[in-house]
Image (cartoon, rainbow, N blue to C red; front, side, top):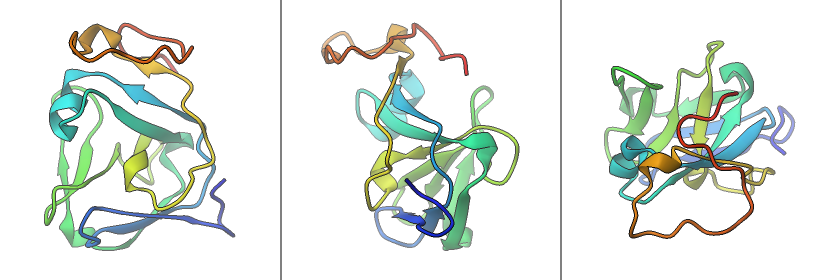
Length: 141
């Protein structure tokens, strides 16, 4: 589990944006929404949530972070150099922040526990029978 004494490093694909997680995640799961599908080019994204947006520190590359703020949903942060997704939300605020598991360099110390936006799942990609609760739209936290 990440902590101030044992931070969990992460970065974008090219390494321009470097960050660390210093707080244990409170939840993790898969999002099947169309927005995640189109941003990631995958049938779903895997994210871990931080408590109240705290516990993520940008170490380098802040000027390379671009944030897309859609009309609905959380802001989406990515590297302007390589396009690598790093998180959603506004770190350091009281809002929700979801870190992209694929951007982390080591075990996040949490297993997925839900699937959300199943109503948007691609019908040609079977969702694994993993026993996780499934929510038709956004999971209520």
